[in-house]
Structures are given as C-alpha cells and as structure tokens.
Image 1 (cartoon, rainbow, N blue to C red):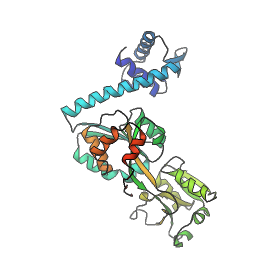
Image 2 (cartoon, rainbow, N blue to C red):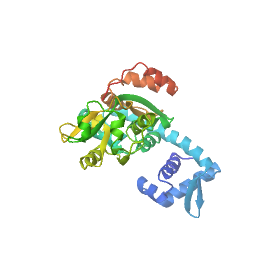
Image 3 (cartoon, helix red, strand yellow):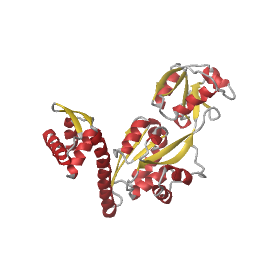
Image 4 (cartoon, rainbow, N blue to C red):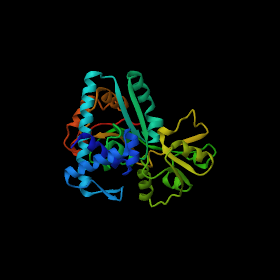
Length: 324
C-alpha cells in the first residue's frame, strides 16, 4: 500500500468519480491513476469503487470506510508537512478560508488586509459557497478554516468556535411607508413583499422561525445569496429587504434606510471551524485572533484539547461575544 494510492482514491472520490478530472488536477495520467487504484484494490481484496465497464459508478460500502481512514492519513501527512514548514520558515506557507459572500464582503476585509501586511509570504486563498459547501470543504481538508453562521454544526469532525453575534436590518427606499414607522413589528414587515437570503444562508432560519412563531406567512418574492443583490432589488421596488446589519453601508447605501430589526429576530452567531487534528501554524492562530480577538492562541489550544463539543461549549459558556 502506497501513500500515493490513498491520495488517488481520495481525489477520485472528491472529483465525483471522474478519473480524467482527477488526473488533470494531479498533473498525472488517467491510466496511471486507474492502474494504481486497481493495484490497491487487489492488495486489499475489496473494491473501493463499483464499476460499469471502464467507468466508476459509486463508492462501495468498503470504499466508504477505507476513504474515511485514508482521509485521516492524508491529513496527518499534511500536518507533518506543516510542522516541518513551521520550523523551517514560520512566516511562509498558505492559508485557505471558505466563507459566504456576506462574511467575505463585510466582515473579513480588515482581517485579511492586516494579515497580508503581516505575512506577505503566506498565500491566502478565499473560497465562497453555501454554508454546507463551506463546511464540507473544511471537513474534507480542502480549506483550513470555514467561517459561517449555518451548517457547521452538522459536521462532527469540525471544531467550531464562536466569533461574534450579529442581527438584521430591514432596508427600504427613503420614501417607503415603513421608513416612517418608529418601531417595526413583524406584522409591519409581513405586510409587504420580502427580498432576503436564500434559505440556509446568513442566519435565514432565524428569520423564518420568528415569522412562524407569530403565525405570520410572509411573502418572500425574491431570494439571493448576495446582500448587494438583495439591496439592488429593493431599489427596483421588488420588496422590502431583510439583510445582515453589517451589510448596510451608510456611505454607499444612502438612498436606502436601514431599520433596526434586532428586536424582531433572534441574533445569530458566526463561527470559525477547522477539522479535528489539524496542525495550526503560528500564522493560523494569528489569523483567528485577528478575526475574533477573544480567540487567543491559548483559548484555541484549550478548545483543541477538548474531547467533545459539550466541553467546547463550556469554554465559551460565560464568554460575552462582540456584536458586529
């Protein structure tokens, strides 16, 4: 059994069983990958992939178990490389972060700007996607950190730490009737068509829960993953917008009015997550602390040593999170 063979089956699985695409991503030949997979299967005495002719069709039950162990092994290998790199050059390397548009556009820019100034030789890669995609990328090792509000809790192999709390605002044109309301109610908002986030994005579930508790059935006429797109359609008169408060920029959105909705919807918490067993280099600890100052290296190490999620929750039980 060779490490290269484990990498091949792992990458083939990640590329939806497309051996050709895997070969391109690894800069090798398709026949070479197919041969090594066959050799591994012959050695193990089981098939990792089921086949129809020459095409891979699915991962077998044995393959699922093997891939799980292979992923852990490959992560350990990557950690060994990170350890060596940390001792050879502590300020050189790479960092991959997956997050949503709202975090990338409104929350992360100061952190990234300062981080790049401090670590010019660290290659920083930003991936955007749905909360589920973000979590999957962190869980399978595609990225080092996932930053999101939704979905992280669905992955038991991720270590998650709370960064900050945030709430929502209702945005309307200046001449809209709601702009004259002193204190909004959910009924006020539900009386108009609503433009907001796609379900599963940016704390959308908290919004839906609030209307449901009041027995209201809001008319959501348009959804998007991008706060800027939501504001654009509010400007077109499609409806009232419900967005993260951080996504309203007074100097840019001066044609809109942001109405506080913190009393209408439960606040959401943005978290940063990484895969259990990940070796964090010095600049990785620094990135976390720059993004969430209460997550010092000592706190993160304490979280890493926790044996379960309940212990992690206990660490932050008395933590007063900042509001963004």
